[in-house]
Length: 417
Image 1: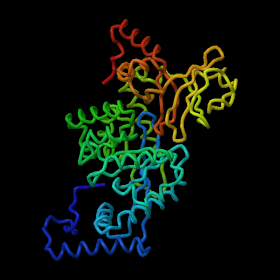
Image 2: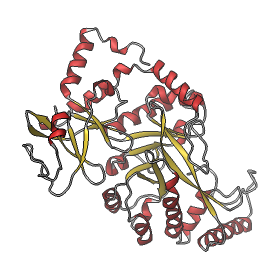
Image 3: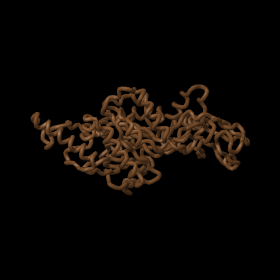
Image 4: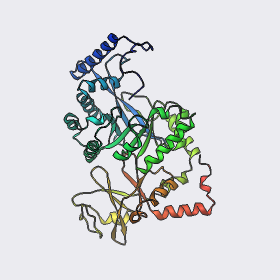
């Protein structure tokens, strides 16, 4: 949300320093706009900006953005900051969130929606009231413009949101207070790179290296990396080369009043460019078996023998006969365990590692082999952008693949940038 502009003053676009009286008037003006918006005297509208999986390629989600009925030089972040300064931050954010949930019906059912909230307001009763609903398909994005004083309270709030089905995203990673320590403490499902790291990434190898390092780190936390603020096709090309899966920015699509899909020409370019930069044989999807996703009901222990309806899982003989694996998930798609049919019985396996189908086999193999000894050779669950399981990969397949590569002298690296 931040754009480097001063909070007050310089409202005519010049670099001149305004007088103290001018600053005071700006503050009063902002406060008037905040109160008028809350009173319904000034309107606002929700816009949708597409988030694409560039290795699909397809739109997988939309960030819901607010456009206020105020002069153009007053950006939304200024209103939110001033509302917070005068003790009305929770009221303004709750109003926006309520509108966003009403308008999310416009979004295709196979896409998530992202809504923004200030993390220090998550405990506020009015914010809790708006979020107290089924949040499946909702990504709650934490804006990082205020220092988080109580990390434990934030973790409790995130647990509360996840119990309702929400995913968590961290904004502006790599800047401000969104450091590596915070990433490890709250374990977001999606990490958004700060746009300053993305801008000019096609000509700045230091930025490219930092983004690649972030991607590796986020992957080890079972999260998705998202590059926002990608504005040019050359920046997009570099992001694809690095392997960042999720992209948002003007090159993907500008904010619009209705959700829009990827342009046909962009889909064609991404397919052609992605194929030329990455060997399909080096992707997990080539080793993946399909999986049946089954919701857990009742008890939390799985049966070790086929027993329909027992142990909190409704299984049928057909499932056991035809499934490569059955993935048991909780109410918010959290992975509970795997059931592997073997000779009419069900072997229970811990779902100890998840990955994305587009990830490289060798990188995931390193994560897998560094698991605790007891789970080191358990299957890997592949999940999509909403963390829905889409398949499993058995470790023996990965080992056989790597053995073949070694026998061929490592030829898998040919053609990989």
